[in-house]
Length: 277
Image 1 (cartoon, rainbow, N blue to C red):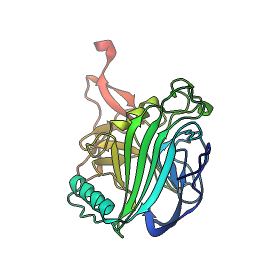
Image 2 (cartoon, helix red, strand yellow):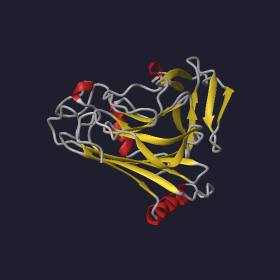
Image 3 (cartoon, rainbow, N blue to C red):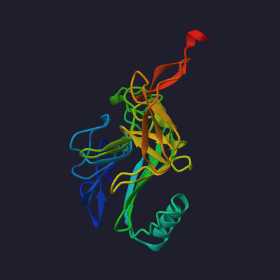
């Protein structure tokens, strides 16, 4: 268990098994109270930075200003017992029957009923990160339980609601790669408890030895479901579609004449002009 300390960390944990993360091999990590696992150094920063961040290797199920001096505990352990590995193998076979993933090692970190810094409420968050490998591929699973707040008061959050300010960041950042779960650093990140890329609410699974997104595509650091499409530029001249093999197919295709090009997140979409309604 990590120390009961605002912005605390486990200190360096020497793992019994190596973990390949975006092409790099790691044998130690840090579990940080503010909802992140890091590899090169501890992360005590309480206000999450937007991805990408230069020269930081981090896994963030829910990076925000937690304070377990108010309430909460952070548990972690390496697990190689047959019960845990068989459960992971069963889950992977269910979600990805063609992957044939047989784990040999896992690391489980759980942030349990974590309060936010400056809290004047009883709101807490419970979430988990599982790292596992079969000696060839690396998998990370995020599990979300009851999620009730996004922001501590030092990050601009409201002391009674735990909302506003600079909300939590969820996803991955490495030297040259990054991905944010939809809703990160907006109030919509609370929806992570009901969203998913594997059709199980509150669960996200990623292959991270070389980053792959089961259930969809990564397009310019944004997640897209199979069949979802966007336009790439502000003239809506190039349409991109997420194919079922996990790749993006982009072709010249302007908006139909009766539609206009409007922003949609980091990209664009074609919709009916409101003036025509």
